[in-house]
Length: 370
Image (cartoon, rainbow, N blue to C red):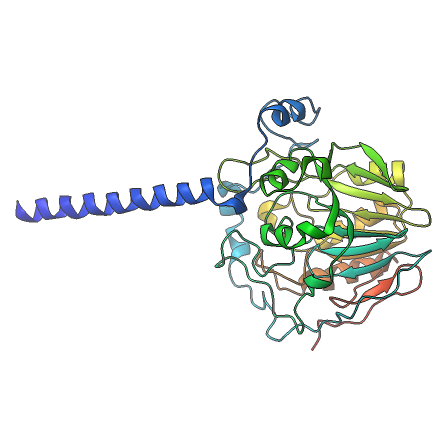
């Protein structure tokens, strides 16, 4: 009898502790600013008019499996036995001092993963600037691979545009947004994502939200939000409350496409027909698995997307910074390069931090081989 009472007491204590832990996690997620804020009020009313919103959440154009526990379980063999998921050496970088602007050609600097600075038509454009150390809302999340030089975020000044593809932590980084806040003139986001920015102190007048196939001319640069096959969400209750998008930049001399994140689909061909051909397409290639094949392309699909887009030059992105899947960290670039060679497509793979000029430079050193 005493043993039974003791067992019940221990069980009650454990359940109580679990309840407190759950309450603590819930309060943290509910009030910590890095989780952002879902659209509400007039914002929610406005985005609910989108043809890509079902009245409760944003949806993809075609049925898309977002990687539920059942799909992960069915592909569980993909999660074991992999090695070399992170580099065992410090990654070489080529960050240099700011240079003079380029008039006729776009200059591009890659910061690893999907973060870029594009200097185009006299404008400085940042895309998905995840420049922090952790692709997570807490400091024990996925840590950036070791870089030879730290990302010189202090040199990212006088930014004309900051473009975001969706609100996942490896693309929308709260600490980076705060550090850049005084340097960015205007923000372009998919529908609903502006709610996060406003919650973090960005003026509503500095934010433009676009739906798929909407476009705008900004200081002579044509900007279009185009479809992607993905999802969104920060915290536990904001899933698909904001939209996701790929982006098209049409300048005076060159056209650039940025895929953001997403699985393969017919939208690439549609975008190519409407806006192509492109001088350069940045194509998601990394952090994939069969368990979430609908929302992240395999490298061979990434190359096919470049073909569909009618892109003259293609570049694999979404790799080289974080381990967010269990494939070898160099698997994306090796498979992408092999497929590009097979399809006779021109590609580039610059060093992290190397500022290259589109139309002049074709960076192709295999820097990932120490």
